[in-house]
Length: 268
Image (tube, rainbow, N blue to C red; front, side, top):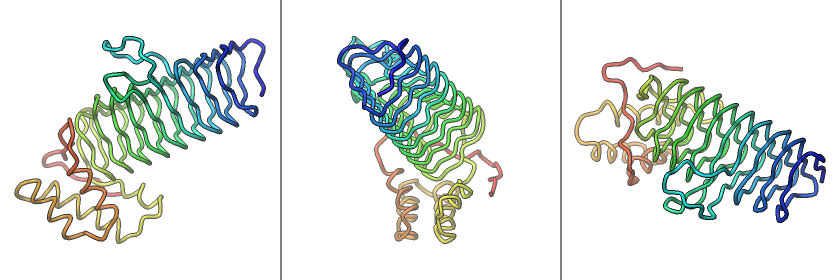
């Protein structure tokens, strides 16, 4: 392993042989850093924190710090970061709380731009992109391939489904279905992320099915439960629609994010 002489590594830390720890990094005694990780300089890793193989961390990031929760009393909670993440300057990721899940989890291949934040007890999926200053309150659940725009923020306990796209400077108060786009200072749905679907090789038929499901759910008549059942019956064979149906039917703490009333949906 390559550990710069100015780095401070506490006894008990487990650092893989191929990891690199740059100047002035501070590594706590309960930290595990896997093969191929590179901490550039001035990185602080604290608490019971695991960093997956190949993850690169830029200067002044702080990982595994105390959760920003008034209920925290020093319990040995955790932060687990997946493989091949790119964690840029001044990113913060807090460990979990005992009253929550006890662990904050970040998946593989995430790109976290400068000053983005993952709060305590969050679950963040694979292949996400958080633009500069994107922020998650505690207990959020973020699906795979989600894009969070610059200076966007999700309220605590919010769920954002896979492949959703959140615009910059957008506040999320309600749960966002998979494949949706969200815009506005107070986030509202604005159609589906068809551009993202095409980039990830979803078929034209699947994109049409997801778009039709969106319209049935949010532009149709009657009770939401009835509309969900109608979507499930009409598009039972499409996995994207199945993901939306499962998301809507799941128990939740937040209401569903809704479209702008009378607004015009943007089509990619």
